[in-house]
Amino acid sequence: MKSPYRFRIGQRIRTPNNTTGVIVTYEADGRVRVVLATGEVKRFLEGMIEPERTEHNED
Image (cartoon, rainbow, N blue to C red; front, side, top):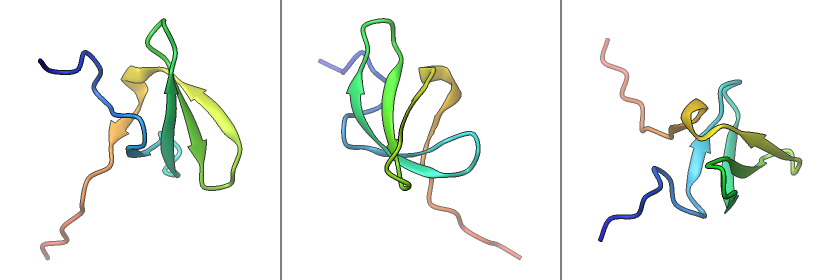
């Protein structure tokens, strides 16, 4: 069965301000807690964060 969440715990994600973080916990209301590279813990609404993608520059 597929996970009800868009993201996995431990998954690296890119936040709206273009920093990279790692998801550490899920909250019951759908928020995720993310540890940023700076070490601080912030909350983001699940819908605000996108999975980190590999970027291909095709010039």
